[in-house]
Image (cartoon, rainbow, N blue to C red; front, side, top):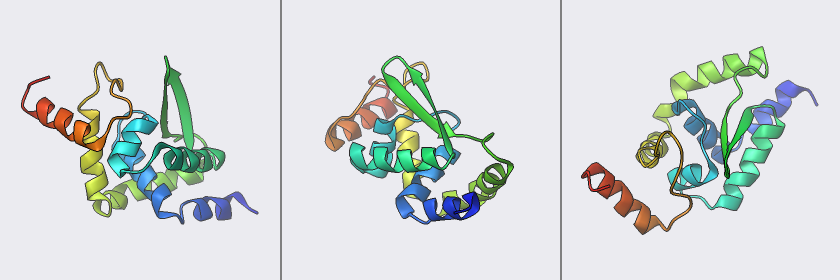
Length: 136
């Protein structure tokens, strides 16, 4: 199967499109817990979809301590780079709630790094509220 067809098959899944949206909206790599909180999906589902995106050459990963950060691989191919540029202009308007949740979650970072990990949804809401109110 040509790489061209493989890429569109990979992007034919809504969850993977939502993931690509998050990566395109973020200026930095994202860890699985940040993605899971933004999309409200369990870690195992996020990991499965990340593996598919990585195998298609769309992502690169970086390990910092115990955290693994994923980001768009803009250098993997000219075709993917052009596709990501086109998507970045249009995809955010489709997944606005995901983008909003991601921005709230990224606001909890310290020195640009995830420090929260996986926590229950109600605790996360309280952390975000406290951060907004300057209580952290």
